[in-house]
Length: 262
Image (cartoon, rainbow, N blue to C red; front, side, top):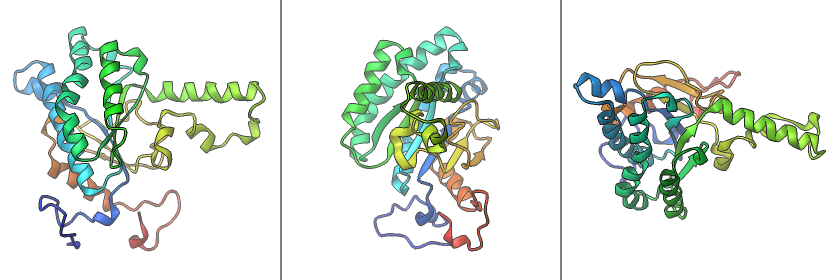
């Protein structure tokens, strides 16, 4: 099916992508950097370097078609187990990324947010990411949300501890604890109504969540692709959105009229 296009929509967006049914929140597990480099006889860090450029491509493509939040799994709490030199390189990547991309973020009205325990990363890395958040704070377009030193189980445990403390201090009754209570004690609460992803994409051929947005992804659509992250293009990203649009999102119920889906 070919959909109508506004005159301002760039020609690189496929005509089969329905701009009225773009997922509001897209989350992505950026997998395959190391394998991409190994296939080319290069060190793993070369894959991460190339992957950084792909982040720029995907961020601009997502903003272009109306995605409101793009959450990227940049560094997990488990990634500290990797070789020391690789971890060191990954901690320097945010500086290289934002040094070159902040002007484009501003030009594209993209706002940077961070989830994860950034107190656990090097001071220089903290400074760089917090500076990016501050420099883009006035932007009103898409939120580019980086999960840095993030682990969903740790996030949930911390949230449960906060709720338990509120109960112990008499600030909250056990019977008043709801799903919304839990959501409001997770790191994604700053995203408000957009906290839960509509679509979760994982590159690299693996089919698991790897401790990423476990609570928030309860009703997300999953797309697993064999494409390695450094090989991802805007066209492939758009194809993933089309795959999402071909799904029936029922949220446990029934959808009789597909045109009513969001």
